[in-house]
Length: 372
Image 1 (tube, one colour):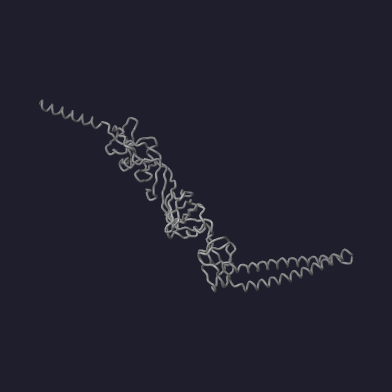
Image 2 (cartoon, rainbow, N blue to C red):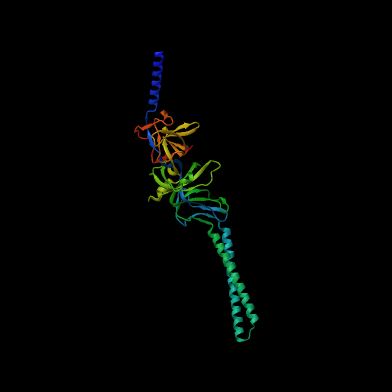
């Protein structure tokens, strides 16, 4: 009987000791909850293009008689690039100029008749009706001159339009016509890249929050071209996704660097690699070691005012390298448990082991594909 009582006493004492040991504080990593400014990082691949480009064509169709430029040629503003046969335009101009000369002669005769009728009326040997009739004939003759002058100007412009000229200093990027070829009105025959600025054109997936990249700085690294890295800013993000490629066009204006036009010409059409960072809002950042589960919901251990661990459910914004970004459940200023959280249960006392947080930083950088 004494032996049995002694066994029960020792067992009770051992359980009590175990409970006492289990309630002893455990050293874990304390991580202050901080708000992180999120930044997306994207790597893009595209090509350099001119800031301004134009496709030129003749106002009227016809047979091309001469092409004076080829791809890669630099041209000046007003320089002739190509000609079409002007025979019909020259004939139309001759007819218009003859009509103008005839209308001017008729006007001169009508003016003389009006002057005579006016003078006769003043001397009292003419009638007011005769003067009014002469004035009406003069008005009709003046109108005919205005119409003939307009037709002559139009015919003169048609002759000028048989010469295709460069609107600005530029470089020829494409030539789609040869002498003897028949072209239609407004058909693109020569393409020009206007000197004075470059853009980088990229095709990128339509990732979330892409619109926040507007105005962001982009580092541009020319590929297979011996040129220094350039800096640009996003100036355009297409509002629609290309149905064929499933991508969005993104344009970056290259900042002026004082480089000569020859370097700009050398970069036209060259491949370029771009790296862009842009803001993506804010979230609560905790190390990945803090994340656990409460049933089927994500949770973290929060250290309360009594120094005990409370299991708290959280809402995950997205995952990043080495950390979890939360959009709810905890607030800035609270303390969560990082390393050592697997040893906890609700209400267990905890002590700060002084382990430096691994990746909790004031800002988080993520690739777009890291989004949940």
